[in-house]
Every structure is written in C-alpha cells, then in structure tokens.
Length: 419
Ligand SMILES: *Cc1c(COP(=O)(O)O)cnc(C)c1O
Image 1 (cartoon, rainbow, N blue to C red):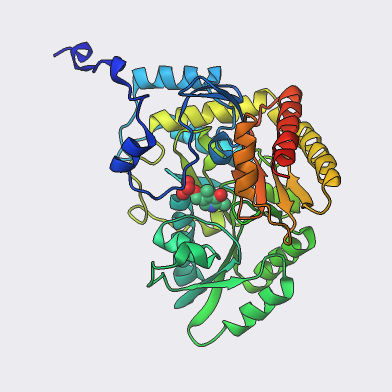
Image 2: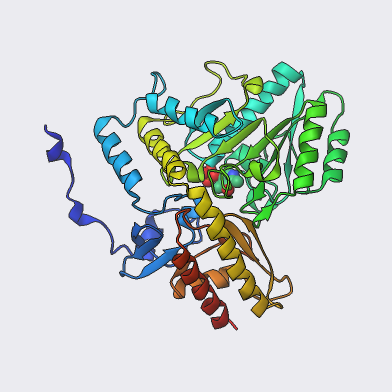
C-alpha cells in the first residue's frame, strides 16, 4: 500500500470539541482556562473563534522562537522526510552535534538526552546517587533541595520538589531528600552538619538558579558562591535545574552564569527544543560515572527532536537573540514597575532576569494571580501564574519592543478592570 492511501482525511479536525466533550475523554489533571488555541505565528496565537492573543506564556517558557518559526518549520519538515526515530541502539549524528553545541556553550563536558524536565532531573538524581556510592563511598546519600522549588511530577522529582501541595496523597515518597530554605546559607550549613550521621551524608545539592514555578525568585549571588565553596570543600555535587531559566531565557545561555558559578551537573528541557519534547542532562567529566546500561530512554535524543533543538540553538546564536532578551527584559520590568507604582497597595514587587519575570501581588490584598491572568485573557494577552500571588511573564525570546508595549498596555487595563 502506498503511504498516501493511509493518510486520514484532515477535514475531521475536532475544532468544534466543546470543553464538556473534552473532559469526557481526558483526565482532569489540569485546571484549564476556557480557551482552545488553534494557530500561532511569532508571539501571537489564535483561538478556535479566530480571536488573536499575544502569547506571553510561550507554552510555559518553552517556545523560545515563538510559533511557526521558519527555522523550526524547515528543520521539522526536512527531518520528518529523512529519518525521525531509530533508537539509541545506533549512532544519531544530530544527537552528537546537539551535545557538541551544548558542551561548547556551557560548563559541561557531556550530555544525555531524554524527553522532559522531570526525566532530565531523574537522570541527574540517578547520576548523583551513583557518584555518591561509587566515588564518595556514601551508603545512604541525601540530596538537599530548596523549599518552594519545582523539579517535576515523577515520584523522585516530586519528592525533590520542596512544595507539600504537589506531594499530598502520593506517599510513600522516595527516600533520601531533605529540604532547606532557598537563599539561606546558614540553614544549608546546618543541614549538611545535621545529616552527617553514620552511613548517611549529603551527596548533592539541587537548586534552581531562579525559582520559576515557586514564584520567579532569583538566586542570591553571595548565597550561590558560598554554596559552590561548600560543595568544593566537602566533595558535594552541585546540581542546577536549568529547565525553566536556561536556554537563554535569563539573558545568558544558563541561569548559573548570572551567579558567577558553575554546577557539576545541570538539566535542561522546556526551551531547549523550542516546543518539541526534549530534555538533557549535562555534566562535567569528573562526575560522568554512567556506563553502558546504567540509564536509557527510548525516545531520548532521536533525529527529529535533536535536529530541531540544534536549529533552535543555532538560531539563538546566529541572530544574537540573547541581546534581545536583555533589552526586552529591561523594557518589560520598567513597564511593570511603572504599573506597580500606580498601585503600590496591590503590587509589592517586580522581579526577574531577562525574559522570566514575575509581578508579586501584595500579601494583604485580595487580588490573586489567576484573577489577573483571566482579566489579561479578556484584554488579549496570555500570562501564567507562578503560585497564588505571582503573575509570570515568559514570552518567546524573539518578542519585539512593540509587542512588549502592547502587553504592558493590556496588563494595565486588566488590573484596572479588577478594581
Ligand atoms: C517545568 C519544570 C520542570 C519539569 O519539566 P517537565 O518537562 O514538565 O517534566 C522541572 N524543573 C523546572 C525548574 C521546571 O520549571
């Protein structure tokens, strides 16, 4: 049979699917906004009613180059016609090229590819535990993570996540994790000392350079420098979860570059493939203790996603998109601060790096992040909460000056509409 005869008619796309139809067939794991998106171009998306929105969510900090970017269209079209998946039983040249690009643009020496942020962090946890057992000789390794962190939804990464609301009803959790307050060096030193008991010892510290889901909280420079020193003194591995802040979103390729330190291990996902599912675990050679058979992923690093991710990386570099991230980020924060000054009793703070920014609502105000996000949808801009009191702004990294202005005007109208 020729392939053409097997292609189903595209005329049956279920654009008329109502939310009720949808909920009949799809598990209710997500609280969704009542919006069905159908098409996108650049920083704009259109819903099934043809209404246009400025997309400052970008698939949750993922669509680095926005929607339907020519470099992605070209890479996907070309690769799907050539070869899309073969497994890691064989060499995949584009996987090697992507690893080379990542190594040449970071502190890492080697990469492993998987499909998501959680999976990349699972790999980091396994690598750190193997290092603890085989190099450090720790029988019961502990990994320290931060309160209000976010590392994923698999059992180990939801355990690593320092937010009880994500862990509720999923016990027993994975042993070997312990939480410390973020940006608090005394608490960290105390935990390392307290946990050093018998066969148990801290083997790794896993942190975000900027906490994304936990409320867009940047890491403190002095804190991270001291964390690095402590790790060096005690032989502890430093793992940075760069899933959200990495791949250029902070205005530098990696969040840790804003903190003047280098991790031993770091992870990437969200923005790495510009929206195709790919994750990566990266490490320095001294902690690359994985051997054949230790870790694997069927889809990991297949020709399709690696070709696309490589096109995203090269486009970031060749078009000097980091300079845009820095300039547009400054413009956005200045505009948000002007809005905050209009409502000092409602808006407590604007913070972030590059194009990951948060608007912190005052604790004693009744206003919620979801209310602002809903009002912004009515004004034609998509935003995403980062907790109940923080509104997050994570547009595509190619966002223009005019689009930032347009979003700021919409946010101003949205807040005014709630008062
Ligand atoms: C989103 C996120 C993850 C989880 O990534 P998934 O691809 O959803 O598994 C992990 N860490 C951080 C910092 C994230 O923002």
